[in-house]
Length: 342
Length: 56
Image (cartoon, rainbow over all chains, first blue to last red):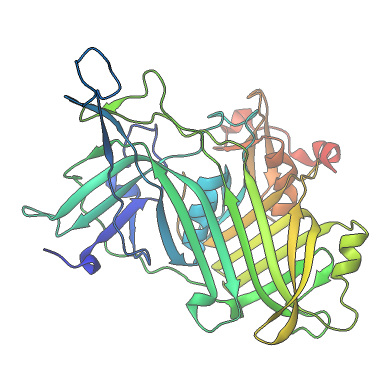
């Protein structure tokens, strides 16, 4: 028996060299996780009930089928290193500069030009409870990928005002025991909503423009819509078929935000006039830790009048357009951590 | 002076040195250029200044 609070999570901050080649311990970090569940392994069996010739309709045999691994959420307070990790592994084209702190510039990879086609970088995930001779749980899932993420910013105190949840998938390949001695737990450099230093969407400055008290909340999300990775030769684990690749499908980048309405609010005008412009969202903790999301061309799709805690608000659904020169979005993260997605 | 990084073309036949800012990198990265380690000094490419005009 063990309490779930004993669960230790570590995963590759560096990328695997191939989908079936696990991270070395030097490229694995250990972090806390607000998701209190372990990542379940789900081997699926099948039977012969559909086959005739047995003389009856009942199943008589079991067969190993495949590992149907559920998606797993890493839920954390947004920090510079976690954002750098999530954005790099979910979007794929990463440039690193600096010598400490390190600046990660990240854009979505294009299938036509990505060196790994439609595949993103892979990482390994380690979960342990009392690792050692009498471990309750000690395994490393190999070939994990980031399916999507959600960044949530809201008017509230503390770290919960800036959250990042990352949804991960894995092939079904694993090693147990993991053979990994997890490092000491990392201390992330976390953000909160009070650290927002730039907040301009489609020409409207919500930080210093207007009353400067308009902004209520924002959600930005990315979804890779991976295609199933079972194919001839995709591999096996314990006699069960595993997935051998995660290729992105139609990716989706969504941004919604809520602002208080005031005299002269221009959101409706921007929507009706099909106005587009850049959107810049920046959080700055210090010179070593910052995050900027630069949406190259944002328009407004919906501006819905409502109320939030009794205050008249507009919920804006942005539409992020692909700019022929600058692409869709450029993420820039400054963090002291080296080697993320390298 | 801003730091420079090296990017390789999608076709893999060209390497350019680009200023490591989001504004300068975005057009190149969005058209498929990827970071590569600095080439040996003898093979150092021309700084990108002129080519930037192509990308505004």
